[in-house]
Length: 240
Image 1 (tube, rainbow, N blue to C red):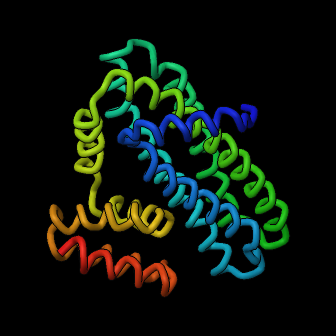
Image 2: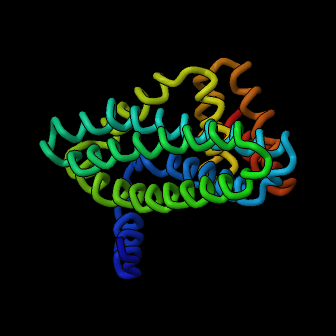
């Protein structure tokens, strides 16, 4: 996929002229952040430090589990919404998802092998896994762009925002608590202040108080002092 600045400009202008609900936007920010952080962490891991290496491998395994679950959510909720309205519109991406499943399995196997690797071979095996993960991340970044452009074009042409909200709500409702917390961990810190406040205001209104407070306590650990102050002011003034 080649970078086309005119396409980016056209997309930005179209969205500004007629903003629509983008069910990919926030979760893809989470995925990009999780992938980038995991890749950088693996790249700088000290293979001579057993704990550090174990933590880097565990992060890779956590990432691929998250990616696998994300694929399943799209296959189970988003693609059916597309297919019933525009048959065949999700076929190409769903086929790519099959390749992603294989890549995820290979990364999980590579991380497990690295954790069991003799010390003298760790550096070579770690670098091989790092390059393998880098290719996975690169392909997924292009894949997400395809979904955000081509799939959104289909969804916006055939669905109202209320229908899109139903799809998004069904995905959120399907998440077990542990996965929901991982999602918030990687999503909230990497949203804009306005987006972050929007998500948390909605959660304050609809989630149990204990769940909301747990997410708030978690996200505070990953925000700068300025970011936290902005969030706290918005929650106090607009979401009370």
